[in-house]
Amino acid sequence: MLLLNCSLLWLTRQSITQGLPDFTIFYTAAKILQQGDRSRLYDDHLQKNVQTAFSPRGLELRASVLPYNHPPFEALLFLPLAQFSYLTAYLLWLGINLALLATLPFILRPHLPGLRDLPIFLWMLASLAFFPIFASLIKGQDSVLLLFLYSLAFVGLSRINERAAGIWTSLGLFKYHLVLPFAISFVGRKRFLLSFILTALVLLLLCVLVTGWTGLLSYPRYVWSAEHNPQFVWNHSDGNTPNLRGIICTLLSVNSISKRVVILACSFLVVFLSWRAVRQAGTSSPLSFAIAIVAAELVSYHAFVHDLSVLYLPILIAIEQLVSPAKIARAIRKTLTLCLLVFFGSPVYMVLMLRYGHLHLLAIVILVFFCTLLKLTFAPIATTQPA
Image (cartoon, rainbow, N blue to C red):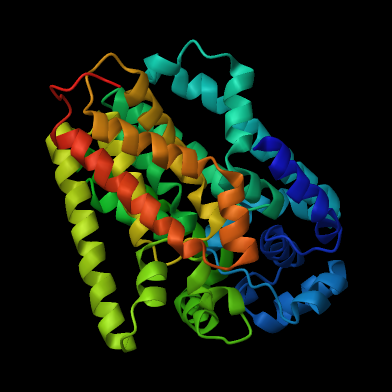
């Protein structure tokens, strides 16, 4: 799988030097802050001028600006990289992401006893063989950072430190569509929610310091307009959106209002089941944590291939369950194994996404994975011996 992923990197290597990766949006935001135009962070015209300066070929190939549509506070993270050229900044960010991946085994192994004795190099190979993580590295996305923060939150909950878990989770609000559904699953956990909200307020203050109130208030309007801008075709590619929204919008032949009702109903059900699982198993249970992350992926408004990087943690938890001495029903064991094989099959992503534009079909596997984890949570011990 890793060799296949590297072959994709080789085929797309020229796009990196041309400024086509998603890292462009972070570099653009950092350049705007460096120039002192903080209040105009969400000005398409200014973003276009900045991108023209360092990536004229990329702008020409995309036929549109690649907009920075993340919260203002995240731009501060990339500000130190603005002093370097685009390619140097990209490589530095790639190195940071690889360093974050390299720390995951040391963070997670004490809390996954079944995987504790596996060599470090195997952990690294596994993470790089997981296509969404590799895609995030190529794109220069921030999904690996979110995976790292979720891992720290997992450790916090494993140590029954809900305050620390709430802080780490809240720091991931640069991808709020993947974090807020996760946090809802922990409604009722006062320590977690209090630390989550307080950290979110600090991030809000940072947003004000970055863009001012005027710039901050323009952010929701900017995101909404970008969502409906026909130039930004990636926002309208339901076929490559592996979540409930993607699969419902693609498969249902009904009007838009009916689709929204179905999406909301299904999303509510998934989040409710996730919340019940957290109450049933407790916040320190790895299974409840895995379920909450998978639920967040399913109900997120956007879910591109790199966003699936955070599924790596539920995958590790599922493998931990499979190698544990606990008896698991044969059907559950086989279903989990099949889901894991699909998740780690790089050709699955390449064919569905790059060849046919139907990555939304992967949402079916994610949903089956979610339901199987739920079954394992509510009925963990079975009378059937493992296969």
